Every structure is written in structure tokens, then in C-alpha cells.
Image (tube, rainbow, N blue to C red; front, side, top):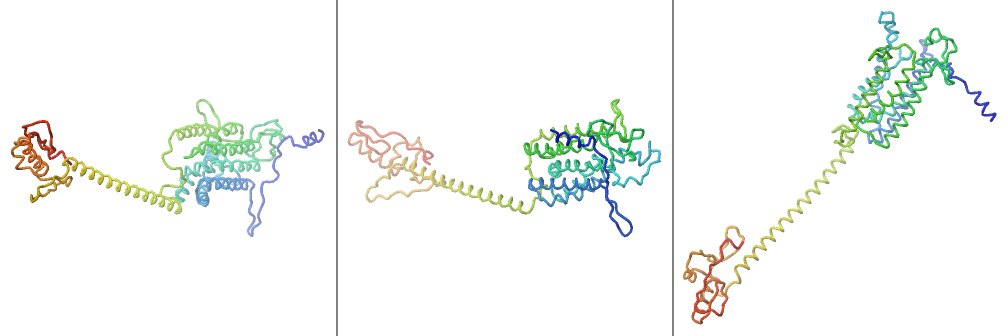
Length: 440
């Protein structure tokens, strides 16, 4: 227990001010100052790119395309972040109220601190869009992969504010209060030298690190696409930025809206939060009508394109085989129908009649439709008399006529089909021959 109390007593009651802010590199014409602020930004960029490249590769994109996009996005982002800072905190550059007493030469001196995240995101997105177009990938897919890495870069880069002793909050008595050197140009005038301040850089860094873990977990569970993870990043970050920004006491542009006067960054965070929330919901309501691929149409890698062509060819072969099988089946069906028609014709005509010795046989004719072979005089009109049948018919009907004549002499009757019937005497066979169209 005593060891725990002793360790607790050794824990500082505040965050000490930094005693190191960079180092110098000697050069023949002088020295090059490397600021800790710049090192923090560089470390954040490297960590963010590493996480982005890992996620980008898992989505099936070429890992090298991350660097092709980064060479456009990073310079654009730095320029945009600096411009936004100059606009949101113009006094040092243009003087209070733009009275011309500021120092314009301070604008390009990024090493002194001052980058606005909103300008960095907006102009950095423009650079990323250029890089994505050149690399043949979708911007929406890239920003989804980059969202956790962007938040990680911000979490590390925020420590540059600590080394520059800037952008801290109001006075506090909390044990994690931040010490600021009294001779620092950012120390508030009129306050005691031992005053502690809210370490807003630490608040934002911790907030961002928690956000990285949250975005990764949500993306693993829901697999956000089409830019939705990026807008979720914007929602989360601005939600924390509103209350963190409201704690700061450094000089900033004040904006009055709806009767409320507060810092420009607070209003910006609120508007971005609302806009991001709307876009996130709208994108969630839209159905996916295109395949989920990071590549722009027609810009897929050669290997993927060849694989797609192979699939198309395989599908074409399968379709051709199917069609060929169907054609064969149709031909078989037609042959079966023709055979059935022939059998029907044979059944309707009946067995081929026997002819008397020496009697010439009538030649068979083939109709135009080739459907059935039948005798040329197998059909007669219903209006023709029975007397003409004996002289005009051949085949089965002639045989019937001969049989009918024999039946008269024997007292029997003979039906038109040529088969003898008994029990009726003195009658001539009646009826008509089948119609020509009845057999097919």
C-alpha cells in the first residue's frame, strides 16, 4: 500500500511544459531547423498512410496506388489547412479588424503552427480526387479506406500543439492541467505564471484514438461502402470538435448566428456534423446497383479484366451448348411428330387392299405438304352418287364396291370400309369417303 501511495505521489499534478521543440541541422550556409510540430505531422501522415494502405489492399486495390494518391492529397491538404487557419485566425497576418498591421510573411511559415482541419480535408479531397482519377480508382472507395487512417494522423499530429504550446483551453485546477511557459507568446496576458490550462490537444488526441477503434469495429461489422465510413468519420470527429473547440481561449474569428456568438470553428463543426449526418442517412437508403469494386469502370487491372473475359467466354460456351441441345431436341420432336402423322395416316387409310390378278395398281401421289402419302382418288364429294364410286374409286373403296355387288347377289350388305356385314339383305352400301383434310 505504501508503494502505491509513493508512486502516486511521484505522479506530477500537472502536464509539464515541453523543454524541447526541435533540433538544428548544420549546413554550410547556416542551419536547418527541424520543428517538433513538423515531426508530429510527419509521424501522423506516415501512420495514417500505413493504416490506409493495409485497408486499401484488403479491398482488392493495388497497394501502390495509395502512394499515387498521397502525392496529390498531402500537398493539397497542407495548403488547404494553412489557408483555412489564416482565414479563421486573421489577426496575426492582417492585423485586428484587417487594419494592415499584421505580418503577411508569416502565412507560409507552417513550422510556426496553424493548420485548419477543415481546409485540409476539403482541399486534400480535391488532391485525392485527382490522384484517384489518375490511378483509376473510385474516390468514395478510397476515402472509406482512409477514414480511420485520417483520424489516426490527426491524433498524432495534435501533439504538435503541445510542443508549440498553443491551442490550449481555459484555466483549470484538474490534476492533468497543462503548464505553459510564462514567456511563451501564447501565454494569456494578465494571468499568474503558475496557471494551469485544459490540454485540449490531449482531449482531441484521445478522442481521435477512440474514434479509430470505433470506426474499425463498425466497418468490420457493417462493411460501409460508397463513402459512408468517411461521413461517419466526419460525424464522429465534429461531435468531439464542437465541445473541444469551445474550450479554447486563443484568438479566433468570432461569428454571430441565431443570436449566439462563438468561434468560427464551432459553427463549422456544427454545420459539417449536420451535413454529414444527412449524407450518411441518404447513402444508407440507396440500394447498391453496381458491383462493389474500388476501380473505376474500365480501369480494372489486366489480371481482373482477363479473368472477366474468361468468365464471359465460359458463359458463351455454355449458352451455345444449351442452344445446340435445344435445336437437337426440336429436330427430334419434329421427327416424332412426322412419324406420328404417318402412323395416323396409315391407320385412317387402312391396310393396303389386295388387287385382283392382272389388275393394274393405281399410282400413289404425294401432296405438297409431304405430310401423308395416300391414293389419288381416296376422297370424293358428299354430293356424288354411289354409282360413281364403283367407277371412280380405287383401293379400298373399289374393293367395297365389288363386295357390295356380291352382297346383293348373296343377300348381304357391305359397308363402305370394305368389310362384310351380315343380317341385312338387299341394301346397297351408303356413306361417304373420309374428307381429304382429315388425315395429316
